[in-house]
Length: 213
Image 1 (cartoon, rainbow, N blue to C red):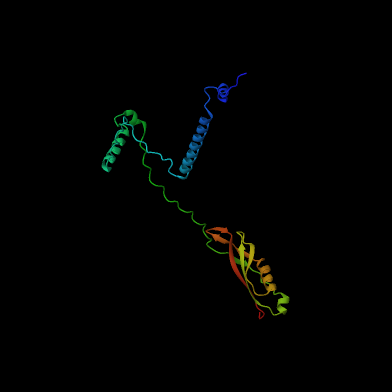
Image 2 (cartoon, rainbow, N blue to C red):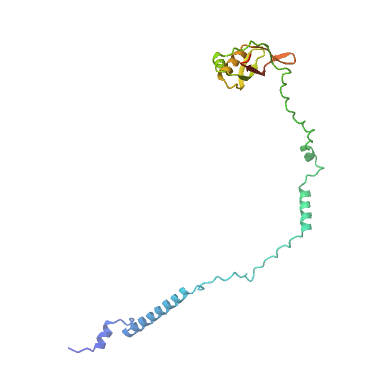
């Protein structure tokens, strides 16, 4: 039985295309160094805010831009606008356009100002009493020595009868005021007149109560 050397056994077990152990170690060291260098470069670019900058676009060599038109002065723009208006205006020689629309006729004279309606005419005469029975002096007021003048406003209808009696000024005694209202309520009046027509009206009537009479 023959003895074989280690090199001969290794050459039989390892394929020819597989690199040796030393080559693998060298490749691993090179990869590690490259990775460290890449990480260092990435970290440096991360802290740099100018790591990316957009360059302005430059015109291509074959691209040609036409110059912008020169703006017109103020006078030329006004004349251009007038020319456009003249072009848009209808031709007066065209019968279809002339007869199609009629010019608005001027409005007639302005309407006369409105006059407010006149107020209703006031009566030409006030009611006047034609039958006026004297009031009775209340006994309680006489015993207490009460006296004074009662001023009443009497609203008289067109028939001459009192419609409503208002107390304008009191005598200071409720008994005297009540006696005055009761007395005037029995009066008869000539109604107020508007022209020749009897109308409603009002008149003030004083009633005096005096102990000396």
